[in-house]
Length: 79
Image 1 (cartoon, rainbow, N blue to C red):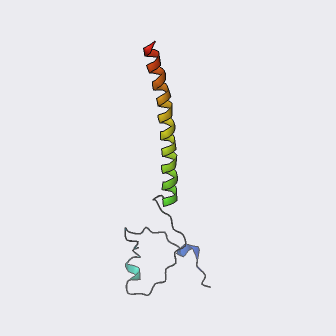
Image 2 (image 1 turned 30 degrees about the vertical axis):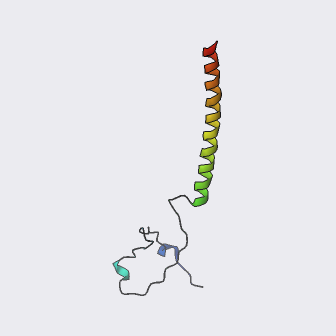
Image 3 (image 1 turned 90 degrees about the vertical axis):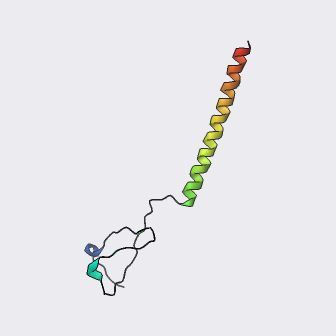
């Protein structure tokens, strides 16, 4: 197993195609790169689905509450 000195670790951002720029110091050299951790600034599909369900449920609850309040208001006008 290859040992890595923590001082040699670098964090870089990829471009929109997943490529990373290493720098000119690595030009014309063979480089071995290991992906240690991946962070995404975009929510995954499960997070989006859960958020959509939660928003949908909240909207239904608000619609029901508004319907009740609206019925009460109309009933008050009819008296």
